[in-house]
Amino acid sequence: MQSDPTTKRCFRCDTAKPLSAFNKDRSRSDGVQTYCRPCHKVMQNAHPEQRQAKSRRYWGRNTTRVRILRERRRFRLLAAFVEDVAVEVLVERDHDRCGICGKAVPVSERSVDHILPLSKGGLHSYANTRLTHLRCNVKWYNNGAAQLRMVG
Ligand SMILES: [Zn+2]
Ligand SMILES: [Zn+2]
Image (tube, rainbow, N blue to C red):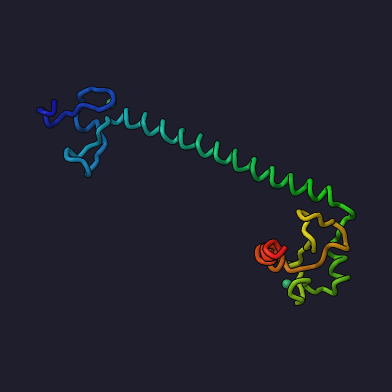
């Protein structure tokens, strides 16, 4: 079938077509792709759809996971809710100092930290909260909480 060098049989539609009907592919010995242009287009169109559906499914699953986590957090907060804790009040009470590192807290770094985490039965109240740096809060969560878990 390859006797005529100016035509090539498309692998997909099984039709002999002139080489000009194929996209160029320098990695192949005859210099063109296995599929003719129309077939290549069909294949190309089929693939992005698959990929899109896959990613949509992935994101669908992922956002559900995030939503569940967020809802669980909200539920925990609701269950532990004693009073509305305003960061401004903590700033007053804690004299603008971080409860973890003891340094002054700029407005952009203000964060409300639960001294006993809500996940461990801590309450969302002024008694169980303190002003911290956002940075310290996260660090505490990653290091301190893990150490506490190891000790306790
Ligand atoms: Zn074809
Ligand atoms: Zn701090």
